[in-house]
Length: 265
Image 1 (tube, rainbow, N blue to C red):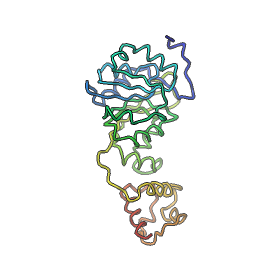
Image 2: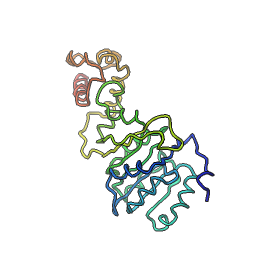
Image 3: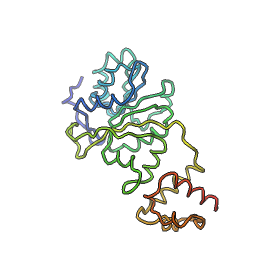
Image 4: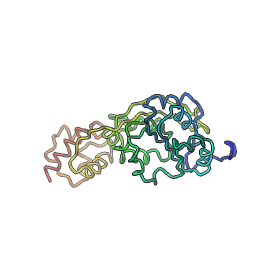
């Protein structure tokens, strides 16, 4: 079994491992963990969070670890829990894994220190398969956390609207660079997420999100100036709405605008 100092950290995997116990204790304290829990961890690393999750004795914990060296390390470190079937170490890229394997033991609780370089692809995966999850706590960059929770202004955009439509979010503790090895150059943040159970339908939703991207193409321009670059007939849109910038509008306003534009087609 390789020791910690024998396994090289790999920059391509965005590896920054937690070293302060209060962080993993806090993450676990914000979700319900008991003998019936199915828990999903992404990026097991040296097993710091894994160990804390197991302390709560869940029914099962599945850990996706893309790095074969660390996957092997975890398999040896937690051999006893693997032998009982409580723990699975899955040496696979979470973004490439089949999510249908989660169906049997749903609902799942997510606990993960997300690699900075693939944060949004992983969050998009949670969104796509949100019916499998009941709640979770993830670690993300401070800037990303605030972008997701933004309601207006600079940094607010399609990402904010998309993730707020499908999840309830709660901003938790800020985590300093000193909580990691190696320390990143930025602060991180714990975020609690819970899928929204009933999401109202939007007319032609795929086209709606493409339309929103057009609206946010030039966030400093008025909505009218952005719509002038499209094929949409905005003649029935109230002048006060056209004078707004996209960063001043909430999801309900965008949906109302979308309905008006579609009536004109």
